[in-house]
Image 1 (cartoon, rainbow, N blue to C red):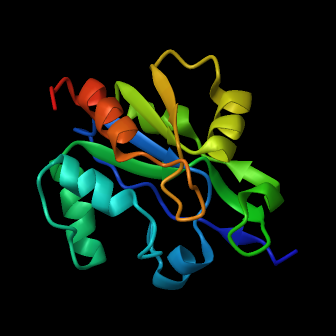
Image 2: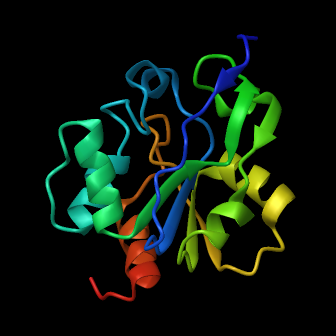
Length: 162
């Protein structure tokens, strides 16, 4: 096991409509100090292409993109022991205070990115009143990822047709 690792603060504001919730930052994300830092992860390409935008080239522009489009971004695990980037090794973890985030925003839909995030989310927040959906992980390790699934969920979340 590695030492205790801390995740990132949530990116959101009072106008955030949709929360995208991952599990815990990967080694590459922790190295660049921001969400989905592995260039092979499909998160940024998928979400930016849904909105018809280029992938922002730095963290401040990524935060601007998220806020401009009503997206809140966080991980269900905010502190844990983990081996590398392997979600199945997450131990001794602390979960995010999702209810507090919901109280300080207009979030009306939660997209959970991947199986481990969904498992932990359901254990601690399965009774939450905000609708939520599990999507296949955008991780490069996931061979079952489909952009169509994400586009469908984002369309539903934002009340848009694709």
